[in-house]
Length: 606
Image (cartoon, rainbow, N blue to C red; front, side):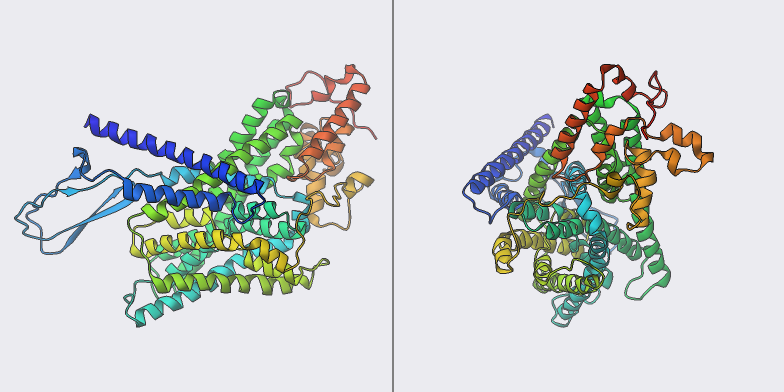
């Protein structure tokens, strides 16, 4: 037993070293290709390719079965059973082994060799790397352009995902009925809910792949915002939509439409979505208040650690209470970039950005490498040609039904129209990735679910290798600008900061954000004593601004991936102003921290 345990430990260690080697080879080879200006392969495609090579090696060069005694299971005679066939399913490292036995089995079966194939635990892999990937995508989103295009992004993310799910589900269900007519499947193998489930899974476009593609090509900033914003938010919709369809299926609706189950699943969809958003924002409020009213900024290491752990806790907290962790960490990233970033020191801002950037980069490599690995090592793939062909056709049809009608409707109300060539590229650039695999790999207990997993892996490979590599020629064919600087024509100075008055042309949300949320959670905006009624005086003095007017300069820039440098430069200018005003005020600038300081805050300048 000890030898067998040691053998499996050695195998696991060897596999971990192989994974690290795969990541290093991917990084170095893609870096070398980029040096030669080769843009047809990015990190995701390279990681998936090397993962397939590793899977091929494990599949054909693994040790002979039955080499270790503990790896062999013996099936003995089973008496006293009735004549009904029984199936015993054993799950070993995500591999299913089935044994049939019938009644009155008198002979002893020969030993059946069960070879242990070491494998990554997908749950650990996704829980470790998916939250930083999603958070990084939301945290580095260009906030200013995201707000400007919020209506369009929400339309593509919410309505577009639902349209895609329904279109893919209907198309694939039609192909499954064709399979029944041709004798390729039995009637009842595929329900409509199964096809809708697949539609929800494959509707999730991948922000990692999209961001890598857009960043490498440096496309037009408006196209970048629309595509990346949609890919970040539609993951949340796809995840919650999958949960809702699962809830409907578990109520045993079958072929017939069940109104109570339908309304329950819709309520579950809205409840999980709203609850996850709320939990992500609560974590942001906690992080912002801690960073605002304490001296963590004096120690950037502690500041970064608290920010990182609290942000990650949004994912774990949501999963613990039955909500969607991905949705929670997504909204946490958006709101942290909106508020908490203003409370961080320049070193803390740089460190948090770089920390999540590293996790995002490594997570991208390991997850896509894992996709390539299981594509060749998972022993129970189910390849159904009609289902796979229908899936490939349906993702093209659904993307067209999503982008073109919604763009037409949005252009009716947009000042800056979405050009036709943008629409063509948005239809083309629907890359799939980590979230789709995560949803497909959660349940492989039935043949239908394994068919969905196999098809999802093939679709991810197709979109990454075919659509991703042809994006550059497509952009040139459509005459879309490339090599655009993300800071081109920045308009960072807000109307409120420039004039000292609220912008009446902006929406109710902007007024709420500027007058209440920013003063509450940051050192920006007008004093809460001016915004709140007099009977809230104690609250406004307790949670109001605690620093001097010069900090307003730190709030002029809407945070995004391209403005971290501007924030640091602005803070340096503010610090130089403070040093000129005299050292006697230095302690006062840090006080007013909910009783943690010893002196009152300086009065606000008129």
